[in-house]
Image (cartoon, each protein chain N blue to C red):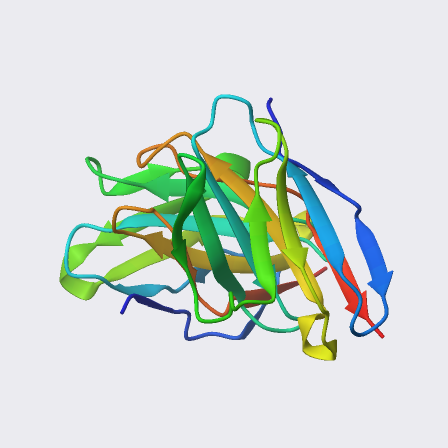
Amino acid sequence: EPEVTQTPSHQVTQMGQEVILRCVPISNHLYFYWYRQILGQKVEFLVSFYNNEISEKSEIFDDQFSVERPDGSNFTLKIRSTKLEDSAMYFCASSPGANYGYTFGSGTRLTVV
Amino acid sequence: AQSVTQPDIHITVSEGASLELRCNYSYGATPYLFWYVQSPGQGLQLLLKYFSGDTLVQGIKGFEAEFKRSQSSFNLRKPSVHWSDAAEYFCAQSGGSNYKLTFGKGTLLTVNP
């Protein structure tokens, strides 16, 4: 069964550093998403991406965050200057459209120290 | 704004007992509803989804859920729980043009031998 692949599985970074989280969505999917889950809390929507542009973003997704689909297969989330509160599990997801549901990756655990 | 409520933070059942996890949604139009399961340190696995049609939907691992519009509910059930079902369960809904998911806070299921 097709999978969404995320790398790395765990990343530790120092506060103020830039990080890039990588995702390879399922190849024929059209909608791409990033979600995050702070330890012990619910999963929160960050951003959706369709037709090579951001279609919706949450209040969390401020100027420190950006997304790219640089080469037609990868989908990246960049955090420019990490803060301690950015420590969370970040999930990538993709979907072919409205009636198909989502496939989530296994997540990247980001730890900011 | 959309919201999903899972009233039970933690449920403990004995192996072999039946299970019902509650979920209430809020969305004006017909929502798309999902149940996901997350084992410790793992990603989100889709158990089942409801878009339209038969209000009783079957999922993987012997789970089912029933959509009740009059109660704005989408409760997850399993007739006989196995120890391997111990995990956190998230109800989610989507709506709108970007199909983003709004998650509940989750219900942690403990299974006693």
